[in-house]
Image 1 (cartoon, helix red, strand yellow):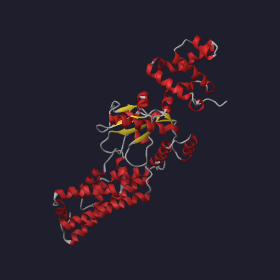
Image 2 (cartoon, rainbow, N blue to C red):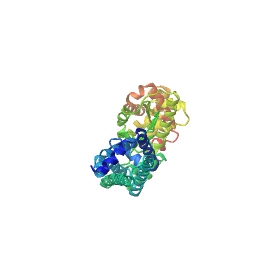
Image 3 (cartoon, rainbow, N blue to C red):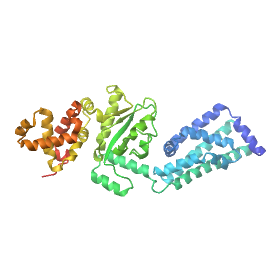
Image 4 (spheres, rainbow, N blue to C red):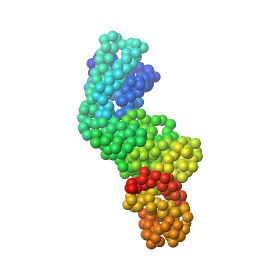
Length: 397
């Protein structure tokens, strides 16, 4: 280390501790303000780094190798490469990334120049210090850009595409809309989804692994709601295991993709009732298990969610016969009458009705013996029989 660099190092290490703490805080706050793209992707890297920790690491690395900016940058280059990779995956434009990094670098240099005004160095040494800092920041930006350009083409834009699909699903997309979107992207369109709404958190969540890695959520901002494909619902338990204290998840009913907005509405309504203490505050509140309570508590909830769950077994019945089976099931549950009595009232041959009842018992199993399930099935059937072609998927005459 040259005598000039040694003198700079002595100056740097002699700065009052509170000045250095304030420097880190100022840079941290400023990066959040001027480079939100950097903040978002830093939080979603595999290690889930915060901007605060990255700023602290950056200053530590610079101070430890102040005479060799390239070596200092290399010591934490992997972190910055991962952020660049995440930016590419999330669909951040190259120009946006470069602009964010330029703003962040400028504010760090400006803050260092303010420190030099408060704690002067000889002019030549001050210039050398700013040159070393600028070189260091330039190298960090190179690591970010390298990570960005190295991202596999198949990954690029995946978060943005998933964000676009979330917007489409949340707005009540038709099956035709979803099919068209699927053709224009590499995303696999989900058949059935459930909303997961985050509640009770004191600080905004930037990540909710593993749900945010394959779920559908807004392309930017804190994680507040995610749409999860039915095949990934088992991952909710893993997500809940790592929640901050007091944070909870409300899982909306599993619905067809075009009814995703209803699952979101139900889960959000459940979170409001959880906040008020009306419903039990569970870490994972599954709305599918509390649909009756939710229906009684709020007129905001659609019966479609109940129908989606409780009428699913009828999918085993051919569409042309589904409405007749639904009528028979409703009469069986509401009246408790024998097949012989119901056959007379419904104008069925007794053997025909018995065959249908046997089929219904086979597809529903123990649900028909569960008191709460019976109530939910009755409500769902009453709703479905108002528009059987829409709810039951019956064939048009």
